[in-house]
Length: 132
Image (tube, rainbow, N blue to C red; front, top):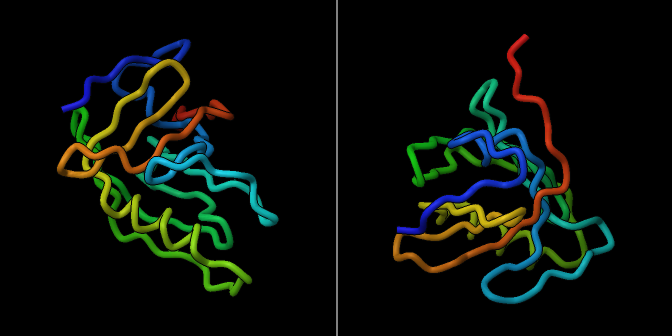
């Protein structure tokens, strides 16, 4: 299993949460910015909700975090049609397969149950996870 390490200002196991992550690599290939924008994901500790942008549509759902285990649950997306849906389909497939995570510096790596690296992200915005 991958081991966790923190980003600057590490908040322990919550270093993964309340950060907007921007996709930089998918299935071993670098991601170039698309016309609609680069995929992102955020995990909100306030309500255990995952949300982001998959390349054409916004997605949302829940998540379960247990140590280095991460499971995205009930992912759904808006239904806009775009000229090329291949990146979006691959992003959603990789997220659906996520089983574990690792943070190295400002990079987040998501792995499937076999330990294969499915996606790599970079921290772009640190969000507040404070409860009102």
